[in-house]
Image (cartoon, rainbow over all chains, first blue to last red):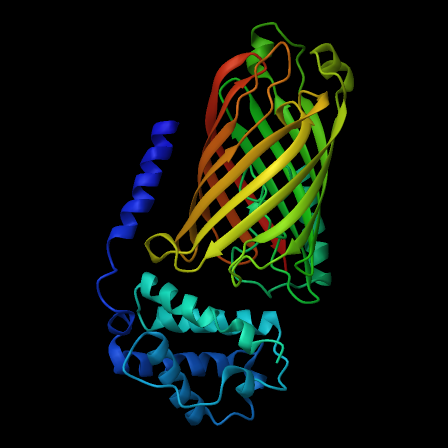
Length: 138
Length: 280
């Protein structure tokens, strides 16, 4: 049994070694990759019966542009987010934890569809997740 | 039969409740004791995927064959608003190895576990600090006479545990990684299947699990156990498991567990399988 455990640990740690060299921005496919990802994500979110309504009044083109900037900046790319602060954009929406999670699920599905490597998906998601406190309950 | 009953209950709940508010897998599976977590160890998570005003019901059937014994567990757990978990589990230990050696009458030893878990603070995924929960498990042997003869001082006991769990979205190898620790005060011999002691022991339990893929979880667990039953030493338990989570309703866990010495027979280890369903 202990040998089995050691073997599993070695496997887990072995997986760490790779995939750290390239920047997240490069792993996402640069500006073009991010634009494609955001296009898919906005469509998914908009079509999601659970949260689509939240975007009913949204200018989707404007949303896409700001999201591209934001993802690019979060991925250490050469962009600057030019939109309102997170609390300001979501002010008055009183988004719940559930709605945030549903957005995350749609965003993950979009990353999968865009064919991003799982480690890159998770690194981006981890950075987006840090914004949660400025997004929900505003 | 029990399993049919459990899934019947799930069907009823399917009509009533619907919980979809948390991320896939954030409720773990149901452990043999009924608490949400890994297969053997409770995590600080609330069973199911409830968030906000949601609630849901999970049910699981598990079985393990260790050579001389088999353990079966049926469990059901209610998760309420990602805050409270109420659970019930029936454990059943088959004693073929002891019966064949003429050391025990030909029957199974059963125990019930009623559990409650309260999320004290934190969020498994989104906060820097781990999610914390406190839990209690009221355990009762259904074979008081037999466990008394086997040397247990009591036929019932209460566990109290404090659990801390944390999930890193980009953890080991960029994979979602969960680590969990629980500190338990218990009186139980072998989860209560072999009765209870009058005095309490403090034990430590832990899990480390990695989502190799969004739907596949690989994990290790360790459950410290007391060793206070005179006639038979009791060892810590450990296991290695793979869980498949195709969606928020169905989770299937498959593992290899080492139970050490049980009821005087050493080297008890073997495969286990656990199927969990949730409503909706």
